[in-house]
Image (cartoon, rainbow, N blue to C red; front, side):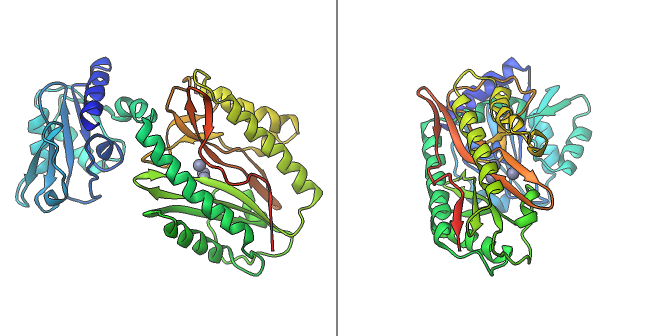
Length: 360
Ligand code: ZN
Ligand code: ZN
Ligand code: ZN
């Protein structure tokens, strides 16, 4: 698997005329090697030349964590008194077109630019992004397990009381439940109640949830290295006619976007499918973000479902579809599922009920 990924990476480096690929912290490195670098002041960097052996330059004390894959890369541990930047520069050699991982610390990029004065740098995402975006069967299976896990949490919350609790208390419960159902890491748990729900990425606080409150819960984490991400909305008691009607618009928008997400459809058309429904209801200016983002080893990655992105969806693309409607000072609504583009059309990985959940 890793060998095949390396082969495809090199192919793409050739297409983009990239002479050397440099990967440090971030998801590109584990995708290519199975090894995740520690975010440390000590540099870890995989050097992939266009031809010849790939080398993982790694601090000596981190080396025991590396699972060696000699067919993919060799390991070059460095000692505390060595200069890892010089080591990397030596491996890059006379290469002039260098692609460096997006999340590489600026201090290392700056040092590498000094050490390689003739090199021109570009983003490694140009190389790896499109490759990582298309998931193979094992990756889709991992995303499915992650989706099923958060589904369980979303369903369990339907029979939990919300009134009289703070957003923080609900956030804590979401995080605990995510771990219980197999998440190794919780990436985020947004709980936006009442007017706070109108801020899409509201940071949960001490607000006490009360009768009539609409509560947006958007949460996700990591199961078997792959991410989950789901949004469901809970209402304390019977929702008002306005909340119900607005939800109907949102649910219709989400459904339209999911159905539009077929192989070959440009990303921006999926966004437009959701936006059309919301705009027609007179709420177009209340849908303030893109319709979705790719998901995989990272919670946000390519492809992005946004106006202007003409990229056609391809087999194995996995992404969220999450339109929202936000009424400042009053309430917010968002509905999010993870979807994969398959030969049989769009497949929703999340299966938790998509209605407005009435809670106590
Ligand atoms: Zn978000
Ligand atoms: Zn989300
Ligand atoms: Zn999302």
